[in-house]
Length: 116
Image 1 (cartoon, rainbow, N blue to C red):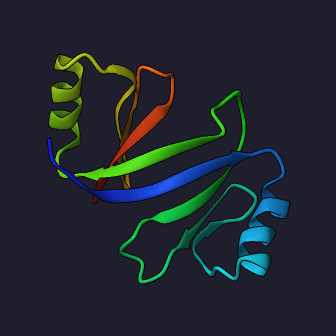
Image 2 (cartoon, one colour):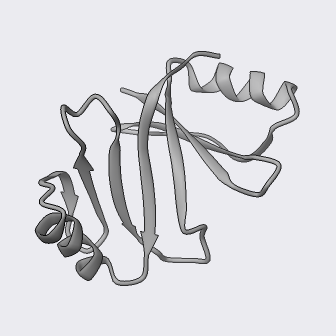
Image 3 (spheres, rainbow, N blue to C red):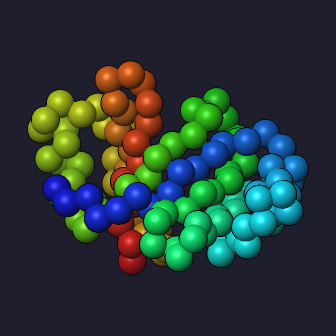
């Protein structure tokens, strides 16, 4: 498995509009992706360092999830599972990419992201 870079840290929030306004108006970050009332992604610096994303909370979820870019999500999940990682979401393909989630021994969620 090859981790390419930090893709994003996703903050799951109850008040999407208020938190998005904070990142935009207080921190001065411009959204690079925005789905009204649902999801906003902000680039940091040159855009190569990873992003901060704000996602509306719809169910009990962790406060935040780290997403890592990988080249081959199915192979990465297989390798991590073989090493004992708990897979909590198998690879799921969307038009914009594929995601999967594992859990570390402390119960923290780590997302994997494969770009289209």
